Amino acid sequence: MKLTIWGAAEQVTGSMHLLEVDNYRILVDCGLNYEGGIELSANENFPFSPADIDLVVLTHAHIDHSGNIPTLIKNGFMGQVLCTYPTADLVQLLLSDSVNIFMRKQQEKKRSRGKFKKNRFINHNQPLYLQKHVNDTAERTVAIAFNKPFKINKDITLRLVATGHLLGAAAAHFTLNDQGTEKTIAFTGDIGRKNYPVLNDAEYLPETNYLVCESTYGGRFHTTTDTLQNTLIKVITEACIDQPGRLIIPAFSVGRTQSLVFSLNNIFSTGLLPPIPVFVDSPMATTATEVYRKHHKYVSNEAKSFYKQHGNEYEFENLNYVKELKESKEISNHFEPCIIISSAGMLEGGRIQDHLFRNIENFYATLLFIGFCAKGTLGHKLLRGDSFVNIKGKELSVMATIKKTDLLSGHGDHSDIMEYVTKIPNRSLKRVFLVHGEPESMEALKVNMELNKLEVTIPQKGVCFEL
Ligand SMILES: [Zn+2]
Image (cartoon, rainbow, N blue to C red; front, side, top):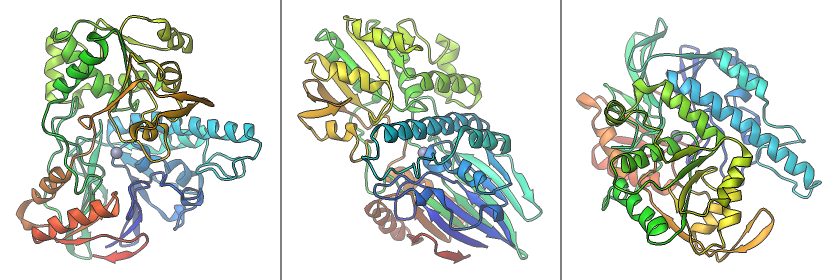
């Protein structure tokens, strides 16, 4: 068998790995590459002919793993896309959102009348793909169960093993008959962290000879000094009870918002805090929450027992899902203390920009970051402590209090990844390929894994390994 890492090689985004067994070609993930400075061509063209790919296996719905499947189809791929049931639903939401982002960027480009020559996703005023390509992706998507062996052909069997990173997220584990020899190879996708609200912990892999492993948090360790619940109570108390203020939480609509709402539900339904109004102001978060409800059987045991005791995990009396833009604007007229959860998580676009515009110069406002913000984004500027920021074309001074926590990060840290890898049974693991991380994160994991007597490779993009 042959393995070629075509994406997320020595970087985080654009996961795309090619597995070839006897001329059968499987692409594991086909994500958007959005590392800074890389041109559109990184997504528009493929280093192989899409028509030659027989099958796509998708580990989870996040756009850096799924976001370029419509381009693959647009360019001639004629096979199916295999993933779990929740991923099949969530990926449609995220891909349609990508089309909206492409369209918005295109409009901005038109408005700027050519002032900006380069745009990461738009070329010749054409978006990377259209909604019809997302619909084509839906028609080619086939959902399969977690942990049930699925026979792809007479030589290849696939098993999707939950990784707890996002609802539906799974590692792709293949058992192959490679010219008479049985071999196993697995692709982790993204590995979740333990005790994450709404999700079960990652399940360990069965015997695996070769592992393509993510390394996002290599060399880094999550905060362990306090629990998420205590942290939220402390922040809400300081922002909304000790003073008559507003707490604004930028959050990704899919995954992070549902976990945050469930955590707040735990706090309010048990009376740990008075019922401060909470607004979830993101139409996409509302739709994603419906997908979470639909796939209730896949949520954590903690969420299931909460459901039995208190009812819906994503509903409580002081919670409002804001639908219309008019309602969103009215939140600003709400003068009592409140909590506003809105997207986008890095503050680049979305309704969160309106809330910031109206609140960033307000001494009584607090902004709580719960996720990563890439360089160059408004979120990054606020986190590094800029005193002035430009929002919607206006220079505003930062008067609001800025806070952050990593307790809602969806990735396991260095020790979680090490545990995941070292739990692979019976010393079956021969070699690990590290992907999906910054070079220093990969290096930290490589050193640690080698101490555990594992052979570790940090593959360069496009190098083919005969295994
Ligand atoms: Zn992910």
